[in-house]
Image 1 (cartoon, one colour):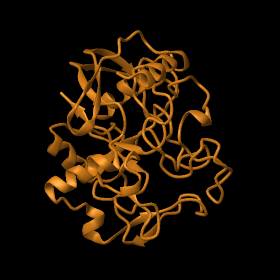
Image 2 (cartoon, rainbow, N blue to C red):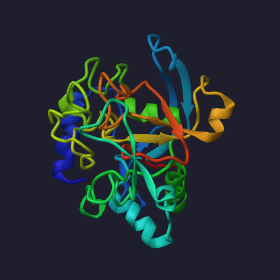
Image 3 (cartoon, rainbow, N blue to C red):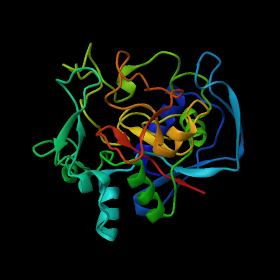
Image 4 (cartoon, rainbow, N blue to C red):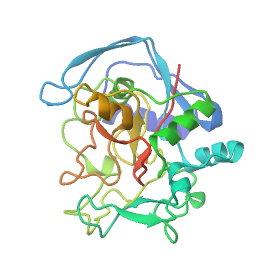
Length: 281
């Protein structure tokens, strides 16, 4: 662990106090840095949340990547396997950003993980340390299988993201816009750039939570396995869950940038605010 990482983790313990937990990190495949989550029983959810009620979750322990999977890591997977994402096979995907109406996503021909906002937009090859986006849930599963891991399930994600916190955010009850990459502004017509970014940001830009995980709130939604009880069996077969919110989220649109909400989307669909991290048993 280098000096910069040590200082950041020390700062995280001050900003994001959680349950006592010695941070154990180790290098993983394809340049992932893994955080060990110890065996134990955890109380998740919240009495004030209508859809994520308090419940217990017991885990034998696992390792989880400390940050979201990057463009560089996904590029290595593609180079090794020749894999084509759903968006690449379709020839288009949905995009949005500054200047959009609330909840507005438009079809863009040529949008895929290499060009998340279409031709002429940001080039993923020039943003190697940004989280990979415009991948479907099935694409994320394919990457995880290649690397010998898997997606976290919705409760494993919450255990690691909370890091012992009992509040909606890693740092407390009130949202702090400079501690995560989310949408700043009264609407999506204009971003005030309070957090320094409009779209994705490099992973590990903001302080990690108390257990050393970065971007558990904001940057990109993170795909998870499993489904909460309120999702029907029909929807569970065709959808995949996502947690943590993204750069698109704000209090007035897509307010999922917290430790409690659970979203979902079609498992073959992709967006420029969807990503994932990896779990290893």
